[in-house]
Length: 73
Image 1 (cartoon, rainbow, N blue to C red):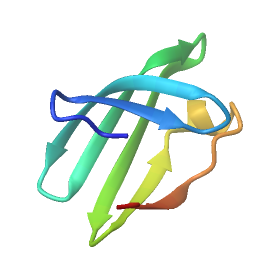
Image 2 (cartoon, helix red, strand yellow; image 1 turned 135 degrees about the vertical axis):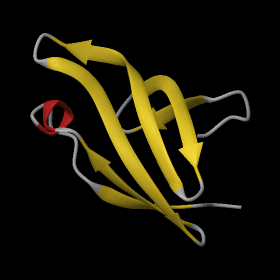
Image 3 (cartoon, helix red, strand yellow; image 1 turned 180 degrees about the vertical axis):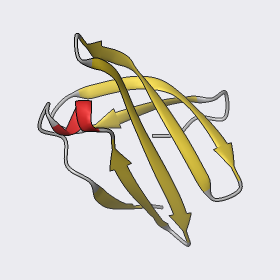
């Protein structure tokens, strides 16, 4: 869920809030959560109704998987 005020919540087996910034079709996600290995971050690329998300290595080591999210009206 992306909000107009720059906040987001990822719903993935739980809720993970944070802040995002957008430059054209590219989105950078900075999560409120982090680990001792470093910050939780991801990047996304918008294309039509799809958002292709790539998580950083810290999140991948915490069992997050890259994926494509499709907008639901």
